[in-house]
Image (cartoon, rainbow, N blue to C red):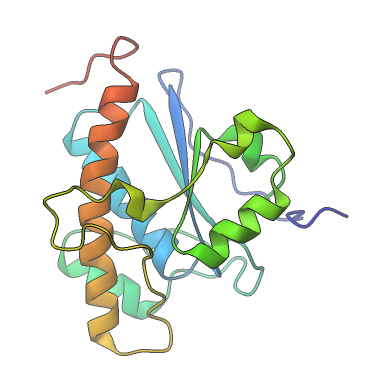
Length: 188
């Protein structure tokens, strides 16, 4: 049995206009990666790229499969206009390496797990990166290596994660805009 096998299937919302797919990945898929999924989806919609870039999230472990995001993540996100309540945790599947153009780990441990389980294919391996690689150079957090796990901490940790994710997603939207030049015309 492969490491990423999951009997629960979560279908990615893909339309006929979808050109690119991004998967946000953390350990349990209840704090960082669903936050990143919601933030990126929101920012893509604002940039007119919501219909051409599909976003999903998953965890490297099956601790919380089927669970909604952590209440603390939901609370912090809702104060800034992001809706996480409908999301449900799932585990990364083998097929995700094929289906997604980018698999973005929140930290080095989860990136290593993705690398260990990724098929030995240079094209697929190039899809594996850290979300923090997209932090803009003018971000106060530029150079951060990870999005820290806030699970065992207090509210300040969840606020920090959201701030870091927002900034990284700003850079990611710009990256995606450049990747998609010529294949899509963003709506204003």
